[in-house]
Length: 548
Image (cartoon, rainbow, N blue to C red; front, side, top):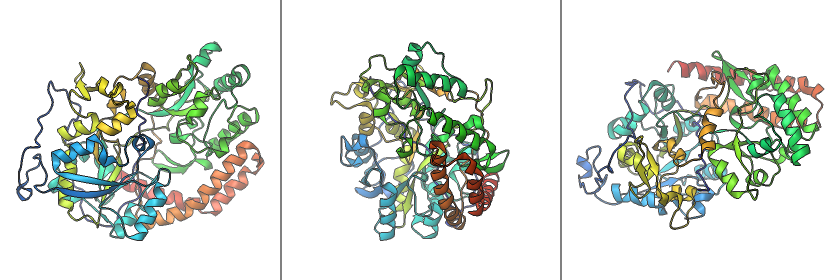
């Protein structure tokens, strides 16, 4: 096996409230269906059940007696476009149509221009029946709450409670899932990706184990350790970008700098919202990065780079030795490198001193991507019945693992594992491509079992999960709060200027075009731009979330 699936970042959709009813009363602990429970044989296919739509009973298939089509706006990645033009051409979606009688016609925006395409589509008034959102990466202009207030987005609480028993159970599987799925007022804005079980951090810092071995170095633990290792990467290995960081100066999800007790954005300490750049540790971190940059230990072109996982050509060209990465990409790095000794492994989040405990990092939410129903949808009831199938045992198994005995079998622990049809595909598909073809992309409207990514994974991939959780209680992470439409608009106005200023100044401080003596002036400007009001809005939202 050479390539493993790149997990899409699971984040929550932003601001939503103000409309569409619901009182938020729940059962709290109703268990969700279990997509990965062991079975000795494949679940029974109910595609032959012809219950009329008007007399439809949950769990019966097909969902409709006459073929029905809905349109869905859905971003895609290069693994999709390399093998098909539209997701609805895939085996998975054709199988969903065969079982349910419902066809989805996907509308895909250009890769890299999702938000612009979405905004233009909304403004034009010509948008599909369903839209997929993903946090701030692409969402309704002004946030989901604005879409609800504009009448474009239909809240689905009543629909789900009546026509989607599997989804309803999934979002009530425990108190934390319920709090994240519903708004402060108890509204349900759409059909979430619900994570079946807790996933450890899937993203963090990675390093070259073969370089450490060559230099006879133990795995660095502290920033001082890394300063020594990066210096040797530069001098002995010849790396011209020993450490890779994005232009923000902060690898995503707080995976590099939490030892400085700060972030470049909002987090909470004992229930009090703070903005990281206002804390002393922020300047300490910037001073460290400035020193490392001046010594040639940081990618000299970092100011021009925007990435989550570091670019593949940098990793595999013997140019960098410490970078942010996704754990399932380790085998891909090695497969694309010309160096037979290449080995990328997870590096623990650096500490300032041995034994330090961390409080910030990547902690996955219980719900992530979301499919919202628009006012253009001609039959929300039928769509709700259809989408609920993917939260059932049978539908979730299809979405996560595909077809029993063709794409998966049950392992000795009862958890499905992929077959050679996925790893050594007869049609020449890589594993990421095979996953896009035979199963559902892990995004939006699904009961997701992340453990499928470990099926056949090498030990370095498995070990990363534990390594990136070490000495971190994640106690300062901000929960997925929501702002009202008016709060969201005010917050966006304030933070637009502040974020721009922060991003510019961080780069200038690190590369040295702005002396660190001017750091206090930067902070004074941030205060003048009303950062206190932005913090207040986040605090109001956090207090509401905690009261859900």
